[in-house]
Length: 227
Image (cartoon, rainbow, N blue to C red; front, side, top):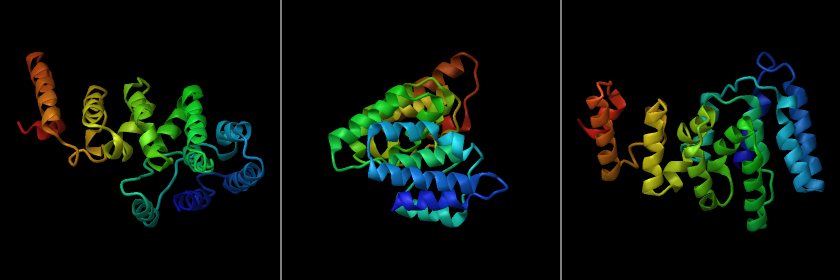
């Protein structure tokens, strides 16, 4: 189960990176037990918001073994440049019961609507592992349109959800937005598997516009359009 792997990764974060890591693990266990006894949205939202105060924001170190384990559980799922609070929030999202689909989607959607930037980063990072993946397609397109750089990166880079779930138009929009915002396009999961003629045409028009304006054309763009 991916949530067990994520929690073991939380436990593995060393004291050199996060002095209060043991306290954070204890607190997360306590909150999970409390929520299991009283699974209300009030408790769920409170913990989601409070997590950074107990975990801190140290960078997460992921061993090659854990990278392989995560990829086996969900191909393409990576924890790259995450902080401990982001990891803990993604783990916490997996505690929500999935027996009532409508309630699940409604409650997680409410988090998206009310979230501040770091919370949005965690929510978009969690898309590959949330239940009912087809129900988050519109939300993913909202992330692509978002103008906050960290939120854009969370949905565009090292995230398998777009390649797995978005239709061609939304996928092409993601790739184009990545070029517009100077993201590392080579780190878009599924970039070559989802390559399509319509995207090539759009990218070629974009390259022509840049050439006409005397602007440089990136190597990634040239590689994708074949010029």
